[in-house]
Length: 391
Image (cartoon, rainbow, N blue to C red; front, side):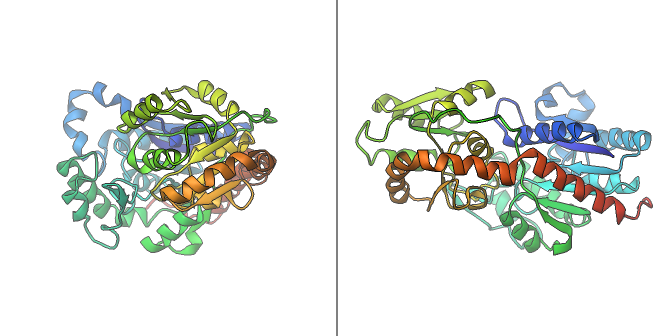
């Protein structure tokens, strides 16, 4: 089987679980004998684009002429069985779906966020969940609130892109919803059940877990929706030192909150930005991983990494987190300070008994052998039933 994997990579300076998942999935497919043809662009390259492409850049989410030309040449030369799309913005554009269909190639898309409707992709703004654009032909609330990159102009362009490409998205041959929450979002968007498959992402098996370390680890982008402020509010409700150490890794606009907490308390350490190996070491040094987003986070990679390493997760009951953690891999609380504060000592005391169930959940539901087999089944089913006549 030959598969084109299309993805616009997020900037490397901002940790992206989606980039990690795409790289991992490519490696897993190749290990299973699939010929993978990556078709990727990076947002890091925008500053180096030729002058003509820079002029046309504002229109690239709608069309992306250079990307379509390159993709068309690749499809004509390689004649793949499937195009598997992840993130198309800003350099690829959803138009890649039309380009693939023009070459008689079916399209599978993994849906990582709510971008079919929401300009930011998060259903979150100004510190709270928001679905103001849901059901609207044009997402004017996104323009009013500058939801895309803090710019009214760029938000207007993204809202227009979503309106223009509504028929494009609805022509995707199979959607892979990472969780049941995303499946519900797609149904609400008008996608019929028979074109939706729920299949989470997975991560490579790191091997048998090390013995539990001590305390809690929080590793995420330090932005409002990721729940750092919620965590620190809950943490401060306990006397210094009574919960064990809290390590915070990451960067973003809320970095001052992490630095202030580390300066105020002896049991909080701000680690800054860590590479993958450093993050692995901090995970091994911890007993519990905390994932406390306040938005409907789809599938936080930190939870998969925690379970793979036999670390239970204390998470908020939002988005795809209940789907991931289940009943055995940790603890779920409502996203409010009192509930999280009450759960912290429970997680501290029960970490050892939840460690093995967390690892078992990973092996059963998120191991690459399990998920790659399911993905290959999706490819086979869609290619068998697809009319390969160019559209």
